[in-house]
Image (cartoon, rainbow, N blue to C red; front, side, top):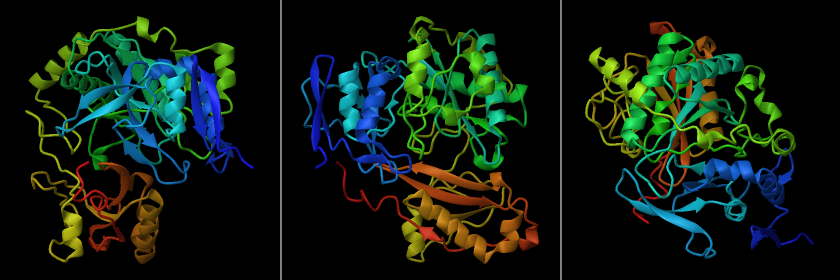
Length: 445
């Protein structure tokens, strides 16, 4: 009979691991215990990536091919040695979030189904001043991995030119991360402002290869996601296992490893061996805190030249100096189903504010609870419109993961720019019309 629970001893504490034989990665065969053992093996590096930081828990209780949900509030039933801190979010809500400082606490949250670790860029003793600037590189569909690495190297060079030391790591997914330790002298808006300036400077140095454009239909190449520095945003930390079929790991690198790195080489199986052999490339990261003054001076130059603030994520209040933006409408989907509000016309995407209009000929295809369902809707649309579908380029199909209150949902849009105007299909009823509010409507817990 499979064990229902085992006890592991870490940091002088006993940590219960329930259902250790439960398969978390069906295609690779890795179990929950394999995941715990991985984090124990790289514990020094994994703890360094999250140490003292509040953490949003992203829980895969049924493994990486099952549904997941976000849990900001720490479970009320927890050992006395689990630390928490109260965070206040842009929405005005508060939550006691878990703070990890050692391997025992780390193993405890992994037992809850936390496959990857998602800490905030602040320490628990000062929640208003980040100590980390995060560069998150997000390639558009069809972009080669080599181009991602070229942009990563350029980001490292640009950071050095502005007095900052970047620390590179694979994201464990399609993208790449570069982190900078910074002095705790600046607020979230100031750190984000510096990140916008950095993104625009990298785009200036490599136009067409790197992009600082927030709207997907305007991007080219690799997007430098400055909004990962907004308050309440989290990014998978160093040594996080990602929910990929082969259990890839977000792996710290030395800069000389970046040009030839292959993300598929870094998995739950290989990274412990690498860690034992070479240690943690980010071991001295905390000793190298830099200043944002040069980047903030650059931001001021941009503003004097007529570049205002860049768009914020849709759940944030409109910021002074921010251009008009569109929010993913939570109100339109139910109204569409009732036949009250027609879908937006192609090229006329608008949110509740009604302020922004894109000139791109966009149509929305699907909204779904899972990516698989959203993509199934896309395939149905392609079957209906084969001529238009044949003209689409990879970057014309935009699959957005939308973060809801408790879990993500997915939206698919298509840019018809490569389809002759007279041959463009009209906006139709969505192939899948999921209402992201259905699971929390009326609940404010």
